[in-house]
Length: 351
Image (cartoon, rainbow, N blue to C red):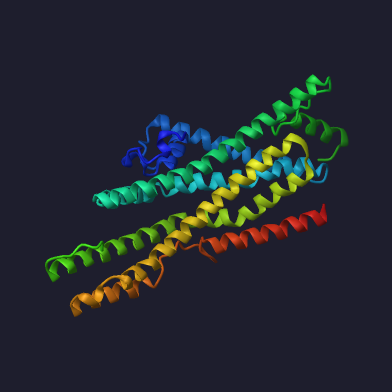
C-alpha cells in the first residue's frame, strides 16, 4: 500500500515539486520559503556542517591512503557525493531568485491546462515525477542510515563476542593532540481532435501552441543556465562515485557491504533521473513534429497548413538541456556506465 502522496488521489497543487520542496525546506533552502532570521540561521548551520563533513571525510581518506587502503576508500567513497551536495546547495542558494521564477512559471503554465483530459494527464505525470523523486530520496535516506547504523551494528557484534570495540569515526578528538605530540617528539616543523467552426479559431489555437512551445523552450534554456554547474559536476563525479562504491564492495565482506549496495543504488537512481529527464525533454520536443504530421492538416486551408509546417520545422530542432560537452540523455548514461567499468577494471588491477 503506497502512501497517499505517491498516488493519483493526492491534490495536484501539492504534487508539483513535492519531494524537492520537502527536502529543500527541511534544510532551509527552498526558493519559495520565507527567508526569516531563523531559516537563514538554520540553513547556514546545515551548510557549515556539510562543508566540515566534506573536509573531514576527504582529509581522513587522503591521510590513510598510504596506510590502510580499505579504510581510506571507505571514507573517500561518500566524499564525492558530499561535495556534490555542498555544490548543489550553494548554487540553489546563489540562483534562488531564478529558481523561484521558474517554479512560479511552471505552476502558472500547468494551472492553465484545466480540461478533463489535461487534468488526467497531469495526474499521471505528476505522480510519476513524485515517485521517481521519492525513489532518490529513499535511497539517499537508506544510505545515510546505513552509514550511521553500520558502526553501531559492528561494535554490537564485537561486544557480544567479547572482542574490543573499534572507535573509528572521522572526528577523532585526540588526533590533533597526537599530531602535535608527534611533531614535537620528532622535532619536524585533497489538437486534440476538436473541430473548430472557423479558420480564425484554428489559427488562434495554433498560436497558443506556438506560444506554449516557445515558453517551454525559454524555460528549458533558463533551467539549463542555472543548473549547468550542478549537472556538469554531477556527471563528472558520478562515474568515480559508482566505481569507488563497487571497489569497496569487492574489498569488504559480510553485512558491511549493504552500505555500498544502497549507496550505489542511490547514485545510479539519481543519475538515471537526470538522464531520463533530459531524454524525455528531447523526445517530447521531437514528437511534436510527428504529432503535427500525423494530424489532418491537409483538410484545412493553406494558411493553416503553413502554420503547421512552421511548427513541424521548429520542432525538428529538439529542445535540450544544455550542459558543456554533452546533454543529459540515456545514451549519456550508457557512456557513464562504460567509463565506470573502465575505472573499476583499472582499480582492480592496481589494488
